[in-house]
Image 1: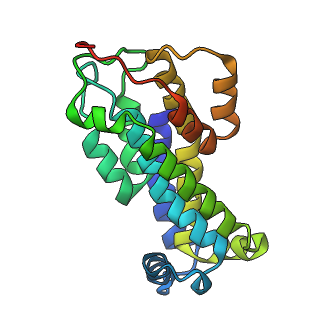
Image 2: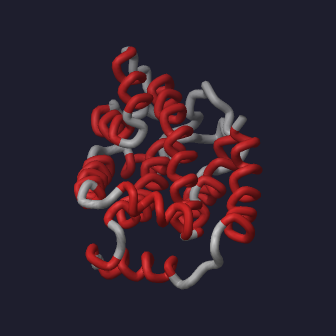
Length: 212
C-alpha cells in the first residue's frame, strides 16, 4: 500500500500542476518568504499553518525512524533529510522498505542518545500548537479557493494528509519495541496523528540499547 502511495503521489502532483491547476504565478515563493520572515499577515493563515507543519512533521518522523538500527536494510537518515525537501515522497520510500516489528539491533548511537529525550518532542509540540492557533484565524473557504487554484497549496495539502496517515503506524511500532502497552496510546495516535504522536514521544521510555 505504501508503495502505491509513493508512486501515485508524484504522478498526481505532476498531473495536477501541469493540467488541473493554473500555472505557478509566484505564489509559492510568496509563501516561502512569508514563512522565513514570519510575516503572518502576508498569506492566508491556514496556508501558513500547513506549510510550516510540513517542517514539523519530518522532525517527528525523525524521532521515530532514526531509532531504527542494523535490522533495517537501509539507514533512515538520508530519507529523513530528503523528507524536508520532498515531503512524503522522500520518507515513504524508506517506510515502504522498512522491516516492521523488528527490535533495534546494536547499542544506541550518540545521535540516538541525544534524541531519546523529551526536549525535541516538547519543542515540536509547542510549535505545532502555535501553528494551529495561527491557522485558527484563517478562512476555510479561502483555503479551499487556494487549493483549487494554487499548485503549492494543492500539493502540500495532499502531502500533509499522506504524512499524517502513515505517522501513527510508525508510532505504534515504536511502542512495540519500547514495550509500551495500553490501547489508549494507540487510540490517541490514531485519532490525533500529529499531537497524539508528539504526546507519546514526550511520555515514551528511553529505548534500551544492547549495552544497557
